[in-house]
Length: 139
Image (cartoon, rainbow, N blue to C red; front, side, top):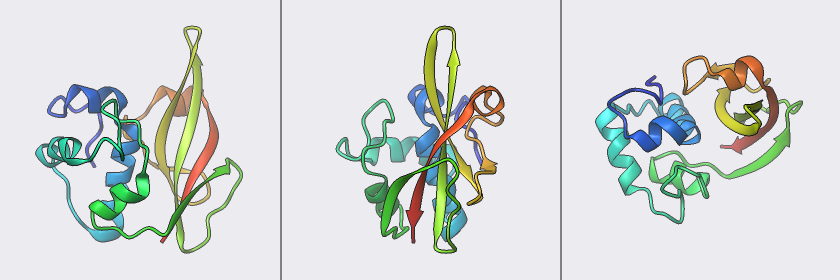
């Protein structure tokens, strides 16, 4: 899978697109739909502002999944200790404090909180931060 810092991706995706890249990872994994760099940049422009702000802040992941061809019934925020059921998948939120600020980074997990895809490759948030919460999706 492509990492978000790929120089052929839009700068806003490179900087803030971790949650978007996680959504694309799950669509690819569960539907076998592929996404190249050009397609990812086009999708950024096609996703309505009411679903994703222009800084890649995801407002409505369920609508984005549906738009990309993956029907997802629900999403909820769970604690880091939550273990997914068979009909669920997770996007993990890591948090790190650095240079006086705190930031979050989203990665994909295996259902038990183990990282399976990090949009940054190997992010400092995962290496030096902590697993804050999970977004659990039911299919």
